[in-house]
Image (cartoon, rainbow, N blue to C red; front, side, top):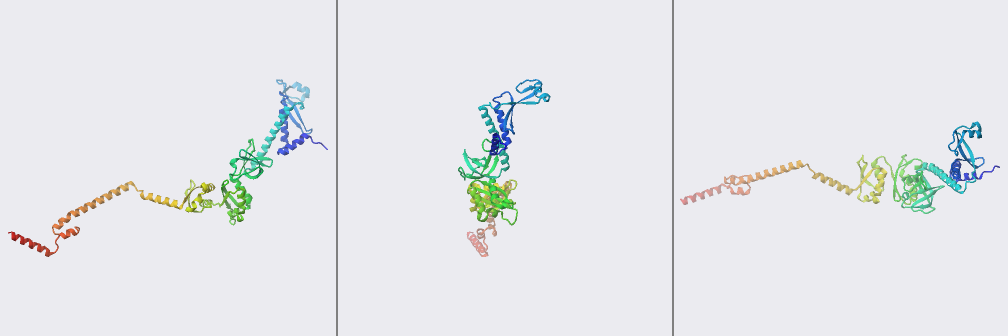
Length: 434
């Protein structure tokens, strides 16, 4: 039975532990031997080779065949090469001369160790990047290993991942050893620490959790058309059914809320509003404002995507939400700017607009109307003055004026008897005097 070389056994063990190919380890060992030998053979061009048959590392000094030697450490003349190897030697060919490795020393061994670790680490990082860069957006499960400046280092099997502080939900606290599910946000190629960046606040985590909990979403019967969240507080998910007989909201909620409750527990009590997606933007915005109920929804500006929503006075605070959270999430989910007003606010606004329309008139029309009123008033005054002046004259002539009034009519004697009496009295008085 053939014995296995101990060095080859160690190479295979390291390759399995680090998850890299044995050829990468062998290449790293060869580079390490070359780096260590340069401490001993400073001026020579060195080449290390791992002998697969013997399991030994071999070191060689390489010299190039030239017509005229200018550097004896790296070059050999054609004549000398032909003496060694016959007529087969030609210009620009390379000749290897064995060098011993036993006397390299302790410093060279330390250098070789550092080179091996560096090469293996680089290979390991490349493997991690190649593997996990294809899984961005997937949910992974790991164990909290340690804390670094507010960031959480999570162990994912043989690799470590980082959960930065900004990607952590404020409603969550973890201890070492806790199991955590998070979504892969990205993979850094040149990071010094863990390359894999996780997130507990990304909306992709919510979508993946629904895919895991709701079979209708997993098989494509129900589709998630959008998801937004403010981690730790509230989230909104828009769902759409591809089959008329399947209620998308009911499928996500589950029997007595079992499906959505498991997601809420995973997100540490985050409230989740599940709304039905609609191609009609008015209907979609109406649903997105859930749990508030809108009275009227109208498009204010289609180009700028602005909508006005009227709600009952008692529904206003619910529609806006805590610190504007509900309407903010609805706007993100629908892609429309939403202006929410109560019925009382809208009524006052309409009254104010009508008041402005009543008071707004054209300046020219106002001036003409003023002059006409002034002229009319002047004409009436003149007519009244003329009538008052004519009344005494008509009374003196004994004629009754229709417009003179009761006073003028009383001064005119209208009865014949009164006129005759007055005439007789005047005639008697004249005869007496004479």
